[in-house]
Amino acid sequence: MKTHKLFVLLFAIVLSFSCKADTSKELTLVENAPAHSPVANKHYIKVALLLDTSNSMDGLIDQAKAQLWEIVNELSYAKCRNQSPNLQIALYEYGNDGLNSRDGYVRKILGFTEDLDDVSKELFSLTTNGGSEYCGTVIHKSIKQLDWGNDADDLKMIFIAGNEPFTQGKINYKDAALEAKEKDIVVNTIFCGDYNHGISSKWQHGAQLAYGDYMAINHNQHTVHIASPYDDIILQLNVKLNNTYIPYGRRGRSKIAMQAEQDANAAEYGGANAVSRTVSKSSHLYKNSSWDLVDAEEEEDFSYDKLKNEDLPDNLKNKTKAEIKAYVAQQRAERESIQEEIAELNEKRRKYISEQKKDGDNALESAMIEALRKQAEKKDYKWDE
Image (cartoon, helix red, strand yellow):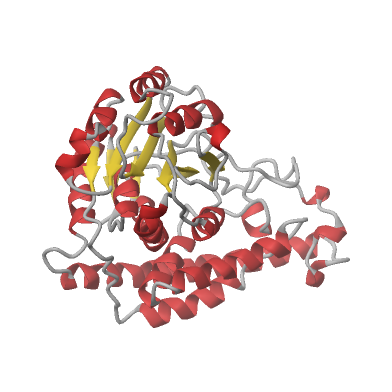
């Protein structure tokens, strides 16, 4: 079954909240935290995406790939108490016969991560296969296996999407919903099909039990990517932006290659989608401190003294600490200038796209963003328009 606005829907709801970083780093550093280090106690969201990858869900996966970056961009405009929230995403697949039956045909793909390139990579790696869809099982496993934290101010959300009855499997969806409530996790359900059919197959009830929203997706609708006069310039800036990254450590070389690979994956859906990814890469939500020296330097526990010569790129090997610092500062200044230029062009792009949209274009996206903004008022959220 083919789904259209799934990912806009998934993340549009998320727009109304915020999240906290939980990055992993290859080096532990202690000295010289820069004066522009981020505020420590930011608001945050933790979102677990549970995607049905049975045979009928090719459209679901396709839309996950097509919608990721535009939704991240919507998130980047959100503000809570004048702070820009961070974002963590976890990813599960379920309902695929290629998965282990002893695990209830459920696979944890990613734990909570800020690495958006990892999320993109895994989405593009998903394939569908016939299977049994056990909603209660995958919700239960995501609650038990993920680190949801104990902070009462965290927003913890599950989004589960599929098209088979919510009642299947050994673990009752009602019990899974109770587990979610006990941990202050909201469960939102997206039925891929007729709205009333989703109600009769208990997708709505599953959401109601865990204080979430129930939604149904028109699986025949196609994503509308609107090109703008600013796209070519933004894509040229993306090339310059990539050149500001300084890979280091064991993962540096492979991660900068992955960055280029995800650029190419986004471009598969057209230039406008590649532009959306570029805009995401210029936002505060695109974090690469585990492999990029410019981002790593902003971490509170960073120290140049801990850098090993063999971990540096060839152009920085055998350089003094002062020389490395100067180069990082130069790349940071270049990046910030490019990001500022992209942001200015994107404002014009957003205005142009809003004027070009017609009634029915990405209708679900518009409806969900309107709904989430109403919800966001209760969380003191505002948007940069």
